[in-house]
Image (cartoon, rainbow, N blue to C red):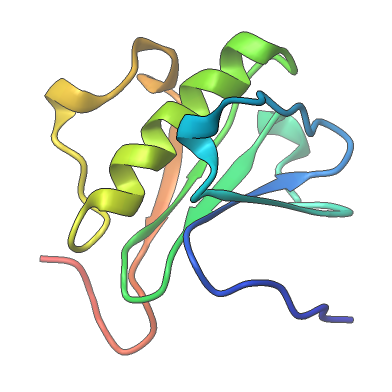
Length: 111
């Protein structure tokens, strides 16, 4: 039921909606897919995660390159952050209003 993947910063996308945006700025961000994120009412949805950081589920995106770039631009800031918190001033316009949930890393809760 589980498949091992890299443990670094990643955007996990439902493979029904996955759309990539090739750009060297995104080289440090893994794009991983899985059959379902159980967010069909909020598709297209992604899970942004990294070890020791708060993770986020974002959704209600159109499956296009513009949305993929906004998600990956946010993921670059997220990967560079200490705990997963990205200042609002650094949020790409394309992710504003798309956050559904946030989850603390194992062994922590957010302050």
